[in-house]
Amino acid sequence: MPRYSAPSYVRSILREKEYTIKKKLGQNFLVDQNYVEKIAAAAEIVPSDWVLEIGPGLGVLTAAMAERAHKVVALEIDRELVAILRETLAFPNVAVVETDALTADWRDILEEQGWSAGSVKLVANLPYYITTPLVMKALESDVPFAALVVMVQREVAERMVAPVGSKDYGVLTLAVQYYSQAEIVTRVPRSVFLPAPEVDSAVVRLVPKPPPVAASRPELFQVIRAAFQQRRKTIRNSLKALAKAWNLPPEALDEALNCAGVRGDVRGEDLTLQDFGRLTESLVQRCPDGVS
Ligand code: SAM
Image (cartoon, rainbow, N blue to C red; front, top):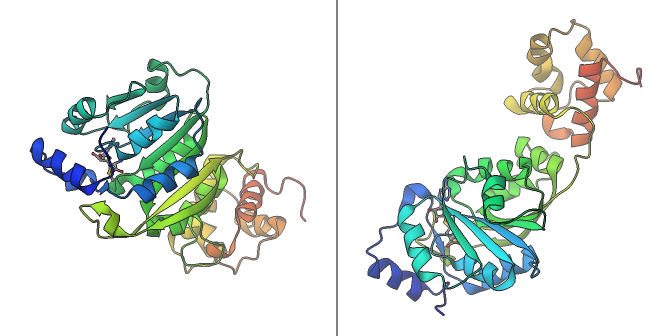
């Protein structure tokens, strides 16, 4: 069996198949077995697991997952790579599906492959041009993922796990916190990819969990987005336009801030998810439990 992570293997396949790397599809192939092992370890794959992989490329993670999991369903947009993978991946428990992972119905695809209820984990070295929408799609998915282990740009990883009050803290941090428990597993230098990307990377592990706040999701994220639209504005000024768009009377915003126990002169970056949750509920229900 070939060593899929060996740079010499990747180079020989590219040469043999006369394949030209497509930069616009975010193709940076991982060529370091140590990082393959770290990703596999973080995913804690057991023999009954199903793995959904986005962007298998030349199969380096696909092979590592196939050795450990019950079945790997790999979604690849590039027809040429799909053909190469079907020829070179020597595993009976891998299905390579040619599709755009961003628009595909993941649950349908898994069910077509025989999945019904077992544990599914998403493992991917994500194409950088669509990292955030793919992570959000996974977090909001109707597939009950037990864990997501994804390689992303380091800067995106730092935003996912940023502490409140830091410059990286923002909408992405709060969205990730709303849906999951997130941690950076390891930082990854650009030198372990072929070709080397222009940025460093990190592997992030996200474990989905029920939302920790009760506020209704669409309104909560409207409030959060408004709070970070202009980071330097105070929360009171940031939310004025939204309160107006929601047809709230002029006094409602100050009442809601008061009710939620949030000072009007702080910035969005100073507020926790729980603060945003209380603030949203106070705006929507006009102080649900009476003024605190
Ligand atoms: N998993 C391989 C590895 O680690 O070497 C390749 C990772 S490479 C960063 C990203 C892969 O995602 C490429 O194979 C690319 O063709 C694929 N890809 C890009 N956009 C995609 C999309 N919308 N849906 C599915 N696959 C996509």
